[in-house]
Length: 116
Image (cartoon, rainbow, N blue to C red; front, side, top):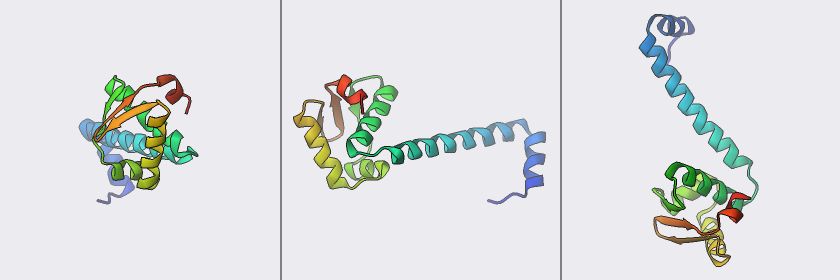
């Protein structure tokens, strides 16, 4: 949907609810873009996984992370290949940092994970 600049300014100044909804949508989009930029700025796959898990830990408030995404969707979210994601998750499990099974990832060593 395209609205001319003058029409948008008119709607924003005359309709409080429109302005509130517009700012909420704009804020949500900025947060999403901020997360994507942060994820793309991380260099290693391990850093990307660590960042993802720390975000989920903060959201869910538990070291038992219930992941709603498939491995393919997680990889796409992080901007990496799915086999690379799986390989790094297995390495992290062998090192005792995490444990996982299908849709659940358990953070076992928060200290190591928070350093990524």
